[in-house]
Length: 214
Image (tube, rainbow, N blue to C red):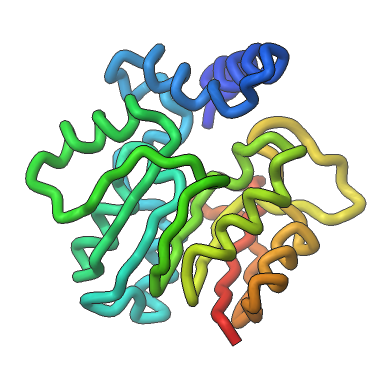
């Protein structure tokens, strides 16, 4: 996310928060983009490499697994997972983003749906959350983490990371290990936690964590 794109997203988020619609900026950003990928901060038009590396290492998802992609954006992660043989549902709060996904991938096996993480319900084998929690307003973070934890028996979360003693920063807001520990109240146990510098974006600290129902 370069500085100019980040500033546009932050300004939209600020305006919608002040108007009492803290999640409305997602739809506003996609609508304002008018199908221009270059104006969407996270539109790399490729699978998140940290997700792809995890899938290869863990041999997940297995063919036929029911997978949900949280905040699917423009669909690249969802399409990658479907290409591995998973039965994929992908949702995003933005109606414009979902229409864009369907236009990009007209023959897709993915079930693209409009949905709010805080309200979305389902029972899946694996939930994939990549860079969505860090875009949520801080006062909704615990609810969002709890919502992710209710979606599946197994979960992978990829996000920006920070120490508890670090300031919360600005959008996209890094998470702490304590934030992610909120998943435990849904009966999930931590299988693996990784804290690393992003080789594709040096200087950005990333967390990747893998959780499973006990």
